[in-house]
Length: 486
Image (tube, rainbow, N blue to C red; front, side, top):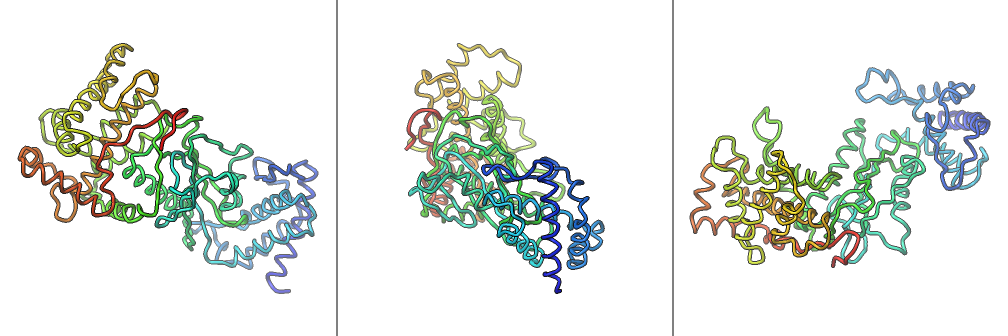
């Protein structure tokens, strides 16, 4: 026999014996609605390793694929034949369960065995990252490819997004263990990215794909001021028999996500802006050797963190820190940080729809609220309600306490968003205000000509990449459980 025939024969013998063990232990047949099993959770691995054919199959795989399995413990990214044997068994169970056919001589078992040898023969493997997001969709509710990321909006005539996740990552349902995440933050979409690679470092590959989708989300938020947020993410291979099992990461567990909603509706006309802004973010200087983080990186981190689960009070403090990192970032000045921050924000971010006076006043109020939070003051409901009602974007406190507080946080988030964009655009090659530099900024902004030049500079650069709209104040948000955001 040739090597493949030998392995296929041993694999089928192993499946026959292993199925006998699983049937004895009432693991199979599985329910049609959940045909996924996992070693250590649904069955004990040693009961399968005890069957006679297990060692024969393991020996055959080690002999046939020495480049993968020989001296595995001496390699930085070890692979073991035993992993693939359990992956084969679980792929057989899944396919048999879906087909409601647990015959060991049937097509589901044959397909899984062929997939085993095909996977081991290939030097490369394909990994897909699928992220379920809320408050984001495409303009026409059709799939939209933007660079390396594809937006797949939810449509009633295309089946559920959970089904699409399972088509992209065949073992995805195994990772959520009978409890498919079902967040509610419409409109929903999937963000997909994939990579075929020979990289043996699986952790690096999965982190790279997740970071790519996270990068896309950051750009979408910066350009659209949306409340788009991640619900969960699945990363896995496009085959059931694979180098690693699918992984589930969950971000939001609250049913309705953020208290307010501002939907991002993306179209192909935004692709140049996404590409250009992505390049600017990729070119950020990490700072001198030994630098752990730059102030601008802190600003980006605080901005992104404000979309995660947590108290709105925590987000308010984080966003204030982010705004200081974006617009101050000075280690030497002893002048009032709050005064400089209000002045710089009002000078740089003012537009016809959001005048300098409103920005200056709002930041004063928001920082007063922040100060009460971080310096141990008592938060009296009447006083805080009055403070929040003074924010220019809070038009009606009758919407409720949570929505009003979220609106204040949203105002600060929007000011940080525009500050980040301003700093990025002003740090272009002919830098007016380089990242990491602070000398002479206040003097320049005090000069009528320079002040107008700086403001016009970052506006025109955004306009040149097709994102001139992003300089404006975010449009009003609606409650996440009522209202129609169009």
